[in-house]
Length: 314
Image (cartoon, rainbow, N blue to C red; front, side, top):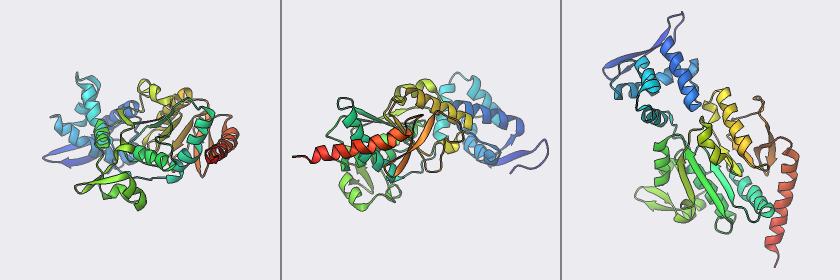
């Protein structure tokens, strides 16, 4: 724990070594990690940062956090070290059907309206922090339930900053904790047992395209940010305000004029002065481009109603 005074430090015993995260290396690593990943370890998370990094310090044969800072900055294999760090920072705590109002809004309002307004254009959906894959699979299930997944051209892009998480998602094996909110009827319909775990059926898993994207790097994001719908949920709770602004700027500059951004329930952009505004879509909230809120709330509902009437016609 941090104590008072100018030379305060935090110590963590790890194996046979004792690493001390003193003020100077803490500040250097905090700022470097925030710059490269967006993740901010403020003073309240100083001990967590020490815990996360100690294993990497040891694995690289180093004896201090300052040595690890220089490794990230100057080593010839810096890209590999950053990849290992991204894997270490990943938080694999998610589940199917998280914030279901948003996937319902996508499947029952946004997607039908898109195909009404753009009948020849595929619907591109980007799960920008897919973790182990529960979010994009939930999206595919919701679209299948709405009768859209195989009826219309739909692209689901799923990325994460951690290559290890993406590999687990691509493999597609899930334990009981991932199903704690998914209705049993949907589990029975869209998953099949594989040993003591469950695997999504091919129809909902095969159309998901997996990749590694760092949300702090504009060049990596830009090809994906052109998606019609972006899910970036439960990521910004870890980011600095400046990192959030930079990431959202890439989203807003590249997403279509009638695009949507869904965030986590505890995340908000309203205090950050970004050029997106909050709109109510169905029973959920999403961010749309400035000036689009009223149009999005009214036109999308009308388009959905028109689609339902068209599909019901003999």
